[in-house]
Length: 469
Image 1 (cartoon, helix red, strand yellow):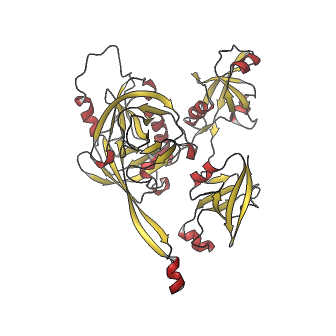
Image 2 (cartoon, helix red, strand yellow):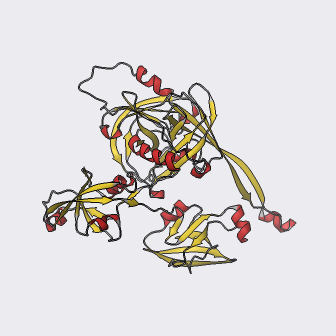
């Protein structure tokens, strides 16, 4: 479960840090499982008073599983400096330990496909899925997407009970929902609440430039619920429990779930290709203010985005979108923020055709755009500079002292503006006086403008200043 603790964010995959297998560890099957769907609204007219939800919840309990994960952690322990004074150069010692994690998952097909959170399975050496009847299976990761915190795992089983998917776009604030999972390892548990809000963007995935569109609920969610099901009053799967906001790391009634519509979009790509490909529109836009609306010949209460950049070589630019255009909707859906536009386009496949409703100088226009593919380089820290973790193998290969920690520069593009300051093989020890040892933290520490980096290279250590555009 991801936890946000005021004022910062605490992350944990159930009972330990995020652990699991990499998406590349398993070959991706080519065929999508057939999902059961029920797209009708949860409330159809006035309903009679309900005294029990047992008949609704009981089948769902069989569709939710526990996921146990483990990984072997290697660390180098330095000898006590006092002992070295008396006994000479005592070598550092390698220590090995096991980290265990616990989360939940939802069976989505009878042949063993299971949806869960990326942070439940990230970096694990072993995964074990435990069904509600006690059966245990070794699981493999089909694919994982940190940007939505979604992962798909597979077990070798048949005739499993599979969840029925609802249309999460039809949820309304006030709808009754239930969280199903294995909190704190006590066993499968069901808690009840309502939909408290929709389309929440709370910054939990900012460290990976993620896509957030969370369902907020007050159904009790705790460690171990990660990857479990959020269901509606008809027993249909509407979300994947993923995070809470809490100063105490325990439930206080502010929980978040990934909507199943987003999860299914990601799942299809992971199963079919092992990765996630996202559409690319190629525009930068700001919210339309009343002042700007008047200047572009629209009414003060007009809603939309004012395009500030649409490069001619991008999909939108090629289709005729220009700077100064006001984007009102995409495929008929009103767009009010750049984050909403980014999220909408990201859920579409490259090559998809989208219809943009545009206002240009007060005149309505309709422009059809064929989306490109969003290119992501997850390990690119700065343009042309790729970095990675400083593993024992890398240390040995590059002859880096065991006392040096940080991120090693693994690749430098020939024309990168940072090639001279950050040569390949150098180690970034600190960014803006904060130690770094993972890419997400390093990216978060860099801010637009001048940044102070402390690096180690070929036995020398120095400060360098780099400017991020």
